[in-house]
Amino acid sequence: MREVAFIKQNKEKWLEFEQGFSNNEKKSPDDVANLHIKIMNDLVYAQTYYPKSKVTSYLNKLAKTSFHKVYDSKRTDKNVFLYFFFDKIPLLSYTYRKYIYLSFVVFFICFFIGLLSTFNDESFARQILGNSYVDQTLENIESGDAMAIYKSGSNWGTFIGIYDNNQRVGINMFLSGLFLGIGTGFYIVYNAIMVAVFQAFFYQYNSLFDSLKGIWIHGTYEIFGMIIEAAAGYIIGASILFPGTLKRFQSFKIGFRDAFYIFISTVPFTILAAFLEGYITRYSNVMPTILCFAIIIFSLITISYYYLVLPFVIAKKHGLR
Image (cartoon, rainbow, N blue to C red; front, side, top):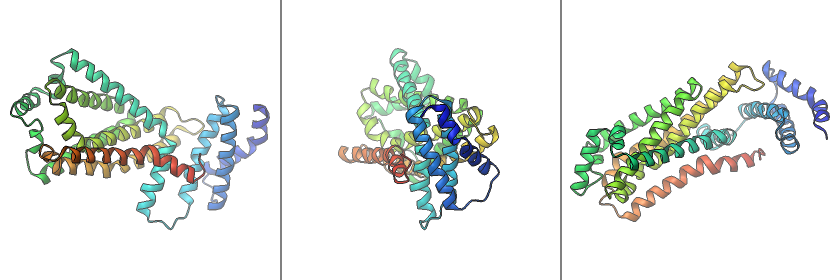
């Protein structure tokens, strides 16, 4: 079917759908679900035959709107907590997956820039990490305990302090999206470079293995969660810059709400990271190496599955693939 004929055949249905939800008309959950299925069918057809057309972008926006209406109106017997974390968040992660991928790409590009900068400039590590931290770490390396800095303070005090710091960083990542995503970009660039400098510094002083063994026990959840928080910030920025067929404020409300939900989903991982840093990392030098890496691998698998694999599983379950 030619694109013009496709539009003419379905135009009234799309306009009726858009106007109906814009005016907040009351519809039964079944009606909402049926409309969503029709929009999704049209979207799949358009993506197949007119992938670069404006009508495909238009239908994609309608599909997002119908998606939210379906799952806001859907009755479920599941526990609200379980529904939020194992249904709603995976579906949102699937819907906004390109922003999650973007966040990873930006992070790793900046990470490699940080590595190159550290290897090419001896003073770069001090500029990023600070003289006090570098000098203290060098003393620890010379004394044979590169991770000694993680042993200061009590377990509980470290846990609270680290959680507070990491949560502040996450909130900044998220809310900086209000500045069209530019603020979020600044935070992710700085933190990616800092992580790279940190690892390159230990490599230069022959302590890379000790750093990998210790730091990533808590760093896996911490850094991965930070990347997801940055993605939430990008979603806010994109909702302002690219409203599509929606009014800009309406697009912003939807984008901010969805980004907030995704941000909330990172909180348990931030708590876990703080717990591991406060109670486990300090013992990494006396723990069996295999146990350290088992924790790291388990952490990487669980959080990767949650944000990168489970969204596709749940989307398929709901017929969105």
